Image 1 (cartoon, rainbow, N blue to C red):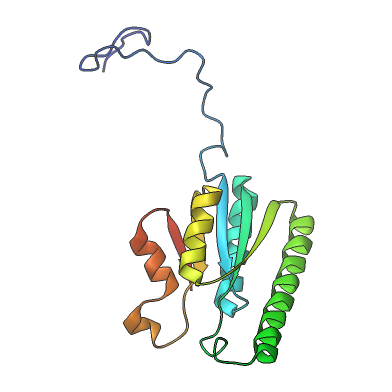
Image 2: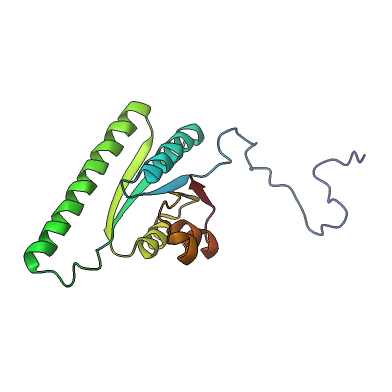
Length: 169
């Protein structure tokens, strides 16, 4: 075992000098700073939100809850009145989720942010994770049978490989 002083160059590392201003390791500072969770109101997404909230509390991270209102396929074919009703319903769901997030954040004492977007869920979650510089993305697993063949949003996020992704069952 070597007993070299720290200010000397270790062999094999030319020009290496430890940074004297570097702070020592502090517990709780080594984890993610921004945890993003995608919610849609389903049971698995709410479990993912609960997991992410607990992790954010323990890591002292900022929790960003993202709700993406995906337009239904028939919305473009529907009349203006039906499309307005669908949009109004999505707005009401978003407001309900926003209130739940606010209430939970006050109870637990975590820093939270709620983001409401419209569009394709995968595309919007990716854009939000990039914009927010998410250190971790948490999503619920899909319960739809067709996603086992085609691929779910969670699978697509994992395959993108841009962020660590936790899929909560």
